[in-house]
Image (tube, rainbow, N blue to C red; front, top):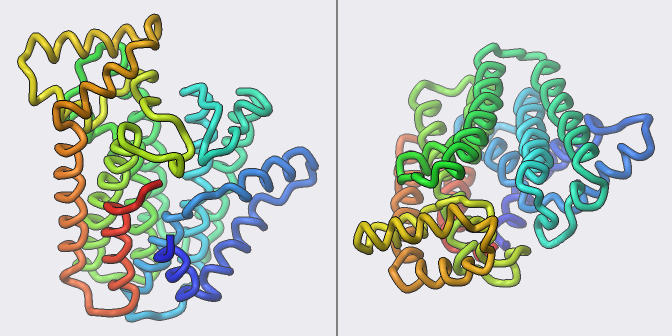
Length: 329
């Protein structure tokens, strides 16, 4: 992940300020809470959302150093992201994340939900505590919280019905993934009083990149490596019909597609069917189809930046888009 390190080095003091804000926001008098927070922070992944926020603010402001509002919104985006992961691990009964045991598996569902709630509240404290206190930024994050809940419920609904199509899938991954990319970039643009053209570009870039990011994650569930940090076919076990499976279903006759959908619907009682479904996807071009759709969204994200002036931040945003397509974890 050389590009991630390069961007963090480029951001310098602004990146350090975001990390400091996150640590200060999470500080508590409760020792157990502090140790749990520290454990989560030690396995915090790429931290793409605050990276995107800082880079977008820079790209929209001719490279000015980040203001307090930008720092707060960037930190809030990371706290919100981790809050959703803590809650998702309970909903999905996930034992592993990023190659390590989840708080859910180590401490139980109650702790995972409570800590997730804590991170969520601390994120809102950061947003509301900004001296800018822009109502548009507040509405942006509020909409994201609504999207996240709706996306989770739609995913559960579709897992029960087994009739997910590509439109359903894109709505789910917009709500669960792209909406927070959008909030990070839009709030950052708001924090620097970006032009309407920059705001529109930030939104288009963020949504396209967020969709691409989740499609790549879903590809890795069928064709990943040990570096992903989880076994293959987890989505099938959770009855999730994602882009690779949708691509394979498009390539076969309707009766065969119905048969495979039935296997996914019955997976809880027959987990041994997972390997067969993975093979079906690979044999019928599902991963290849998903890669085409992934590339389309990456190119859409890159094109969205055309209206912005050339700058190091813009160049890094382009690099991040192509990194999303090429990454292996």
